[in-house]
Amino acid sequence: MTQRIDNRTKRRSPNGQTSTFTAFGLAAEVEPLSPGLYVVATPIGNLKDVSFRALSVLAAADAVLAEDTRVTKTLLAHYGITTPLVAYHEHSNEAVRERMVLRIREGQALALVSDAGTPLVSDPGYKLVQAAIEEGLPVTPIPGPSAVLTALVASGLPTDRFFFEGFLPPKSAARRTRLGEIATIPGTLMLFEAPHRLPEMLIDAAAVLGERRAVVARELTKLFETIRRGTLPELAEQFEKEGPPKGEIVVLIGEATKEMHAAEADAALDGKLEAALKAHSIKDAAAIVSAELGLPKRDVYARALVLAKAKDA
Image 1: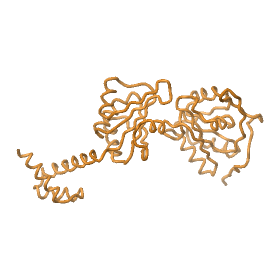
Image 2: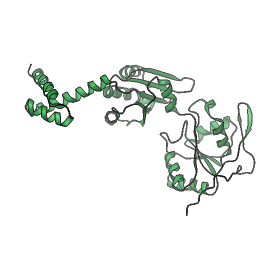
Image 3: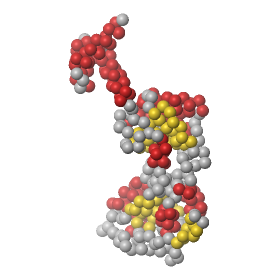
Image 4: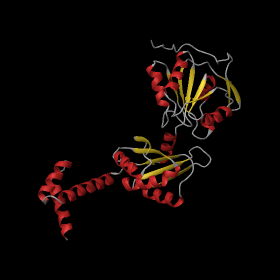
């Protein structure tokens, strides 16, 4: 039978002492936590970006589950937090998750963090959250920094609709295929990319998506933060000349304009007609393509005539 945790049950630190942390030059006492899994957002670069609530949870938890304990150790040490660290990363198996779920069922509060930013965004934490939910255990989000949203609000690209893709495939052919699949999504496209692959990725994006507006945001909130804006071809040319940058990268790509969509539609029509004209008469080719694309036969036939004449000229 699944054991359900009463959210009203409070607890103190494992040694029975009141936990503390240091923020803004002051020592702060934390409130005891209810048992459960706490998904805690941490800074993406600047340690000052952590929230007071996040620090309180990290200090009061029985353990902090970290993607890279070395990275999280720096954050905890900066704020005088001594909560034990436990490694939880993409190679953690089901047995590890079962142990974490058992700890919560036994009445512990566990804080889950990623290397930086909000957990579960391109990291393995969702499996643990899913396991806790399936057991009927409380999952509490502690919101805060996110590289995706930080880049978006500084990009100058539309923010009303956006699609987070994460990392594209590392190989060019697969990358171009995926770019083609997401090309028609109505909104700003948001990607993570490894620095050493950025120049090639921008070249592929320019080839598939054309003259769209784009932004490359690097080292957000850190000392060497840079935000490059331009069209995809412009950025591809810049980074091809300069070589791969250093640091964490977020790439944003604007939605195609109506003119771009029209040009893409015209190119698709011409491609279909040229292929059909190799095996059929102008009339039959126009009928086939018209039915396939759902376009008026008269318009498709007129375009087929133009292409046929150009070919014979």
